[in-house]
Length: 255
Image (cartoon, rainbow, N blue to C red):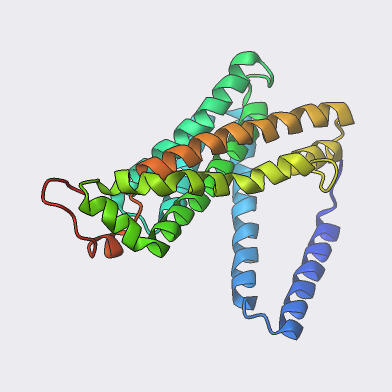
């Protein structure tokens, strides 16, 4: 499929102007955020396109690029949940194991060819899904603990560590973090046409081939996000540092 850059630029400008106009008429205060987000997306996607084009001709660079993506995903998730250095390490492990397990299965079975062109975009989608789940699970865990702080404090007063006390809220946080992916998988093809499916169709693939790849993405994300949600809610501190310092800890335990 050929893309006319001039026509694409015109369409993007009209879409952006229309979004700003709707926000202005509706009194929505995120116009600056929209402008910054659009500008960042433009710069980042152009840069990424150039990097990926280079990786496709130099496959040895794929591992470095994916490593940077994992670090950026962990940093973003940790910042969203106001975590400290230990939380960053926990989120990094959760994202790495979740995405790594899925990519390993797909590569080992040969479901996708062992090439940068096939595995790089698939791995990137898995890392992105893991980051989203880590954010949702971590924030939900901390919101639930904060909203039920007396219950949490009672567990700590009885001798539980922070993570032991937080485990009583972890399962619900994990379950809630998986809801968007479960709904997306359940409604695929009926309510929406997922991104990988549409992208492959636009690229000229047959509908059957597009469906196969999209199924790998959807089911792969279920594994990625299950692992990431479980590990995130078990490994990160259930309270941000500034609030955690106000919780009494028994002298026999450390937080």
